[in-house]
Image 1 (cartoon, rainbow, N blue to C red):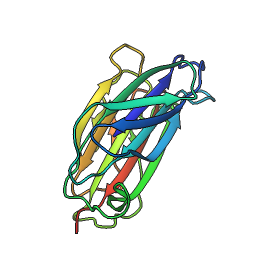
Image 2: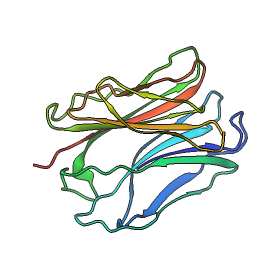
Image 3: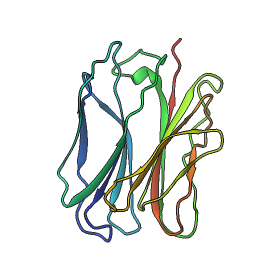
Image 4: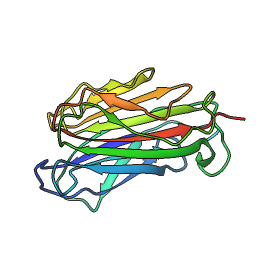
Length: 196
């Protein structure tokens, strides 16, 4: 589950809160990683990634809540399911080989943001899944060979976009393009281990 939250005023008003996830027929949701990004000193956007694992998940509403923040204005989320993953450990920990983040605070004209992972544990069979957030209403594009799963903004013209993508076999450099010049962005990439 990828979640992008943003404060009320991209020019500095408000603070970002802590995000929690529940429901969807899952016993619990565990945070994998997060990254803050902004084109000012105080972060105005935060990208989160969560995991949950059950042999026989149920169904139902997923609830995403924030606490401790002020003037939070927008949230965009995407839920993806991967099957045939390593089910060892606690709540999917065995499937999570590694994660990494990157951010751009809108200086210059990068247009593309890349998350760099370490060498993959299994470069033939493991998936790489990545999510990217942008502080604008944008149409982002997945990295070469990656399949885009989600590309959506908050729907209210608040200026945040979430893009998700995956590849099998994965690479160590998932990236997203289509980011305008001088726009802040953040990304999280994870390697997902195949079932033995």
